[in-house]
Length: 492
Image (cartoon, rainbow, N blue to C red; front, side):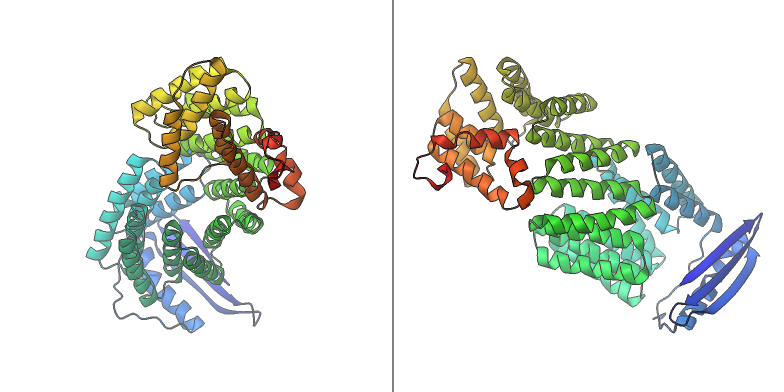
């Protein structure tokens, strides 16, 4: 275990370091340095050499090049990085960016500061900022190559690989990750190696290659544990949970996410906590426990709001609204959708998802006049923003509303949309099948709806199945069981 303290007084600083061997239960190394603040970086080689010699670690120094960094810039970088990692509000993020930008202005060789700025923009989820983040990371990589900073070359290759992965250019992403992995091994940087394995895992997960993704995430976790690097451990656990989710192993996902959440709380990272809570909520919802899902969505939402992550708040609030809809908390769901709609900009192409939620709720409440008004707005948004997804789902609700109001509609349009969806191998929910049955009066869709519910029940814990079947939509579908032929196994 290594422990150090740093004091600064005026232009002087003093650094002390102690290494304690937990197996031998004694201090095996201790040393103190004192010098001018501007000469802080001069002790780097002495410090690292002493530690490596004490721990008997061999490092390949063949291509190592000393890079002197402005100590004042480095101080701004450390403050900015710390402020970002511990951010509790949008203003904290702005402060962090200001500190990091000041570090870059003082010394453009401090690539870690510029890379962190790029990362903040990349993870924002805002298209314009993500584009800016990519530009920053590209420039940072070029600068790293210019001054032959091996660690930052590796970091840069890893980050640019992510952008290729986001664009589904998987081969290029793996090529860059491979280069980063090679550098990490050459310079014996385990943290960089772990982060690179995480990048491999994320892209494999995007491709649906779950076994390979899990292998990389486990490697990332083991390195995090070996370094006692808490953030890496939490991130790896969060990502491993995604594999369990894909495999419908929701109890396992929730268990490991709670472990990740405990670490995130210990670190004081609101961002990590929000991510963990959101994934916990999704796991609960997918396993039928919607009340617990709503509870965790709300906790995640509050953290996202404090951080000022508007885009993520809007997306998460829409998800919460749909969870409330499925549970039958219609008034709460309608309010969530309505408030969320008001948070969006006038020309937001996402408004349709809140409007559709509002229309779906009013339909189930039997207010068909209001449903009709809302669905007219839904189709105005579809046309305005040229939205393709969800045409069958939205048209079905609109036509069912027309049916209740005695208006004319063309069922052939529905049949054509069903065919299109089937040809694309897109999924049909039990609710959509049921709505198609109500609209077309075709028994096969009622059967398919029941079968979907039976399939979903397999993912629900035994002691929660009765609650799951009591949710309004499930209950409504079950009530039509008598419409099935008596010989059909689902009629009983």
